[in-house]
Length: 156
Image (cartoon, rainbow, N blue to C red; front, side, top):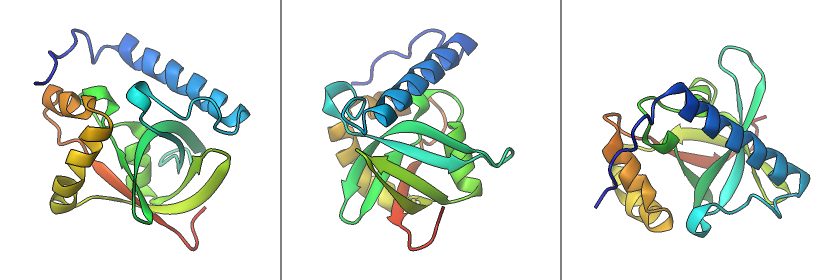
């Protein structure tokens, strides 16, 4: 059963808190080579995703929960169930060449949004890993994108 939508979820201060926590997690992850900041609530694994800003062209890095699916990685553009997709999703939609750091290893990937069929197969595994994904989906009218990262031979 989904939790009740938190009041004020889409207010500016909620965005600011998430941004601040993400920056702190990214810094801690980077300086420790992934020894700290690599796990989220309930032990869900965290990677650092680097995208290219669609307007600025600058590299942007943020922590994202992930699932390993054979040779690829799967991430979720949930933004805690807020009304709009996260900026990193908009960035990788414009430029699918991304980097993902797991621990102290970084690798190039090509990102794509999962099809409806792929999402239907992956969603139960994602929710098993992090049950709040179901709550987040119930809190928003947008269809939360699932993103597949395929190892790239080129990329950034």
